[in-house]
Length: 141
Image (cartoon, rainbow, N blue to C red; front, side, top):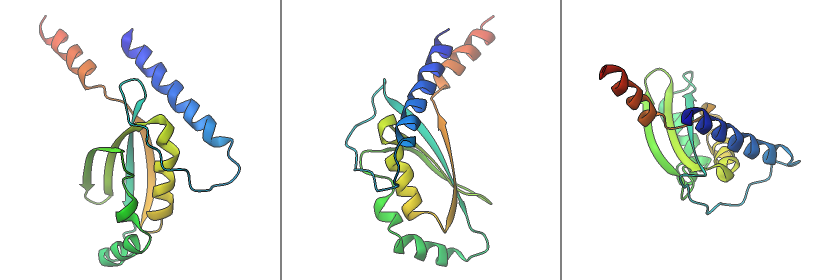
């Protein structure tokens, strides 16, 4: 029952965050947040940065530098859980942040990574403890 409650809580948090941002009429830069992720407000966000394979890497990096990507991402106070290069795709980054800072992270990526990268965002949550507990239970019988 607890996994279902956690899932519903995460969906409610993300829905609330998206509802708040959808009422905004202009895409102005959001204020830099200072909220830190805690156990009751943190979401994980997995970001796929799919690189433009039609352009050389040095050209992509030069554009990222010009657009301020390396200075702006990740925003201060947003935890990087993992950051991998996925060969043939690009970069896959998992961030931990308060739901209230979701728009800020989105805007940093829109403003600084678009062009060299196409982006995909996946809200996620930590399931390791639950999955391992189920595995341990199943293998102890």
